[in-house]
Length: 270
Length: 316
Image: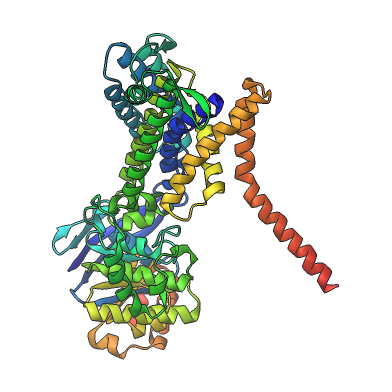
């Protein structure tokens, strides 16, 4: 489905602030799989997601969805294939516009925008029906500006919008991180339900180990712009939060030494 | 009464400018100074075309296209060449000053005894009144020419308001409105937000130039200086309209912009009648817009402070 081949990205090259955000990252995602990307701050997990979404063009490497090379496509063109939920609950919807108007825009993601009235009665009924599944009572407030809702409600709606037209790939960028614990749990639950029901292919960046263990069927761990661990199938089934923390510890200890020393120690002791 | 009819007519004509600015300033949140140049562009182009014998309606339509082109260039300067929006507008406005002089060949062109977009309305009224050049309206004698201009500008601005209202509610118009609100979200929905900005500025300046074209025909001349300060006037009108009708829906926002423009023209007419020096008009307008922009947050702060003082007093 998604094939990432050796992509690299350096921000601010040639300056003091030079950051090698991605270093030769390769990753294959199977159709219908749900993968979590975890890692420390600055490990490149969000950068990887942004490279797929098209926020920037990678320096090298290729990104293919179903065999189509998309790594040079602008962000808006990739939206045909990709649905996104952002970390910032306010980033995924237009605050001054109503719930119905926001959803109606998502109903034509990546399609033409004809000169026909967008929000009318029958569309509103269809929207209300689907919004009901969120169980937030929003179906009665379709004409309210979406900016009047809470972060959790907006994030739930953004999730619904991103998946309204089945995307080839769903990108979730720490989408519960900015929410209070109760809303975060609710949105996480909705994420699981929607992904399972629609049989979506999803990639989720998360800072929560528990979420990485509970929701997806594969965990990819990143560190310093590289993929350092890839847990799937049986290994993923067995892994628990303490195991992940332990892996982080080992990686960070390795950091304390020079890379060559680390390799030496790994060969002798591991 | 003639004063009121004049203010109403100019208000209705300039309401097209306000509608145009509604798209740039309110919908895509772009502070566009091209307006000062494109209203003159519309006026000068129409004046030249009508003077050379074009049909007034066709000349007015050409003004719309010329204005759209100017707006589109401002949009490209901003989106493609990454020039700040204010500077992109200033560049286009400055360029338009020379272009307008080139179009007219001199600094102004009179339009006397030529047809205009209100000719048909005048003819109709003359037939209705049986050939008299004045008509009785609610007890006042009003020249047929003035009444014709009022009616045609009313019809035109109402028609355009209806079309704009419909357009902004379509799928395309909905995304246009979202572009000013959240460009990131628009991109995530598969729409190129830069294209939307260029299109919106083209539409906006097209309407502004249309307003200039009709204004030139109404006042009987086009002048290269006529656009100075027009953008601030448009802003003032939009702000008054918002205070008047609110912005609960697109229809209300549009109605507000039109009513605001008319009210603003009436206020100006009254102020001038009371002896305001016409030279001070732009200063007064600028101060008014400043106050209107600052007042809401000032009131909010004042309210908070009062609340604090009150709760403090209650605690003691």
